[in-house]
Image (cartoon, rainbow, N blue to C red; front, side):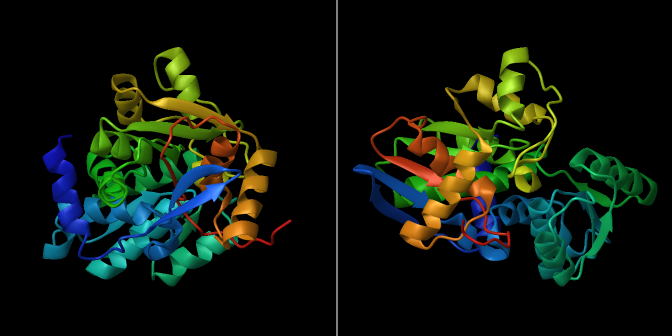
Length: 301
């Protein structure tokens, strides 16, 4: 993927999505900026990649009769929203453990919600099977070039709106966001942050290939991919991508602090980046932390 690919994706999706703001602040005496992507349409960055994939596949011109995907929640919401905008029926497979807040929001976009199994991998297998049988267009949550290009548009916005930024921290699940942002903002350094319970990128870097790690974290509904995407791993290996890891206690504390100090209501996956920055794992004089989504019903501790 080239600079031109990311710019083309930005042109495609820019007519539909919000350009979310960057908030500059000082916390514990240190400067930090937040990319407020939880304010995005559908409440999550996933709409960028989903919309770019559907537009690239010709949905706007009647080139699709149905779209099928699998999701832990947020990608499904992005696909369902984009499909409704473009007039394409959508079927979203989710694990039975999907938070009701996310399933409810997907259904509200007129998508068919199908619950299968107990983890993302179960939903993905079922979705791929149906797509293969029906010939419908399948949108992968993170290992699709068009999805990655769409996610990279978030990085383009950061470097334009915060030209002094020297490091960007993003949460990592399957790796679509880190692949897209890294490709779009080079040479600005990117740090991938993972929960201890689902360290897909850490495990893949160590093994030299994608490996199954499971998904056991308070952030699993968003970062619950049990294996990193091959494309994301290739990008991470080709660039100076940093790695950070936080535990569930740190994630919840960071989430609650974002609310208490800034009234920013984000889901646990988004709070991972703030947790890692608080722990000193995001090194840079002018960091930007991507608050990736806000699709969770919660009460501060």
